[in-house]
Length: 303
Image 1 (cartoon, helix red, strand yellow):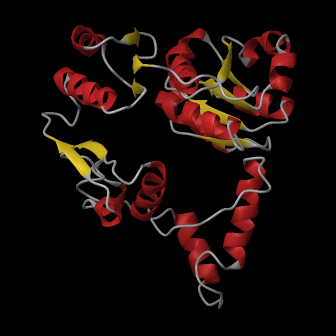
Image 2 (cartoon, one colour):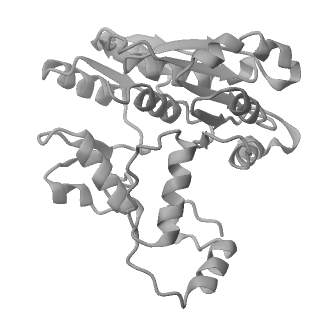
């Protein structure tokens, strides 16, 4: 039986076990202070093109979620989650140790209903939130929500926006590049997320390596970017090519687009993880939102 309920049920990769066995008898300072963590920190700084960054290691996903979410929320804010959500069940509401609340909602399938989305969005706007970004929303739900509140909905990315977008901050540009037009749903999710968060976005669609001249025709856009999101399916080569051309961080997004041995995006994911181009980081398959959010954080460093 293959279980998909939680990564806590999984074992350890053999390569990790081999390294643990090889270094087991070494005496080192505590986790985060040892030479291995120091070396990893330098590689992370290099990959993010941020030599001035401070890298802190945490011992697990629960601690990481608590730390990051607590930093992102104001003291009176909480996290809205399905009652079956990982943060509420497997992490046992650990976030509440910092004074924030897991605001649980009963759902039939772990997804918010259109009525719940409308009610939550309305409350956020009434209590001072300038804008609300809603991801992975079906057209049917958007139609219902749009009857309750004023809503912009993009059917390609399945993103809904209520309220205002932030005005662009500074003059840095985020370039969103795709291998083909089939990658556009993920690309638009990244682009609209970045624009919502207050960034200038340049779209370069259908510039894959099968016609490399299409990418090279936009060399000026690539060289002027502060961060690039490279999105591709199939063999996922676009990220490495862009990483070799650009002198800024590149966020690679594998997509599930493809056929044959693409394995629903796994081939592109592995290619991007094995990229020899420096400055390339990788998010999960079809994670346009995550890429757009991270690109915004990089673009607005120091703002």
